[in-house]
Length: 122
Image (cartoon, rainbow, N blue to C red; front, side, top):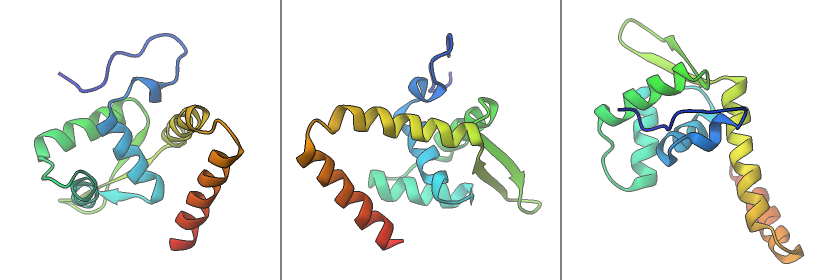
């Protein structure tokens, strides 16, 4: 059974994804990656091992949903990248989160500072 719920109506696909799948999209928003690089990023975030049996079925589902594109890097390695729809899904999630977090000017300033710090560290 897949981790994502079935998608109904015109509601954004991003709102039906699991947190794990959303984290994969967020990782791929930076740059295209191969599976083991995605796995390492997830393990760093979760602080624990991510099994192949969890990662690759979720990547396959994101490909089926049209949020991620899978291409062959070489005979043994696939590369994954966000589609335009995948990027829109990431933005939709960020926008929704910000709409709940930013409740006044002080919080808006905190978010601006986080964005500035994130941008300058890249």
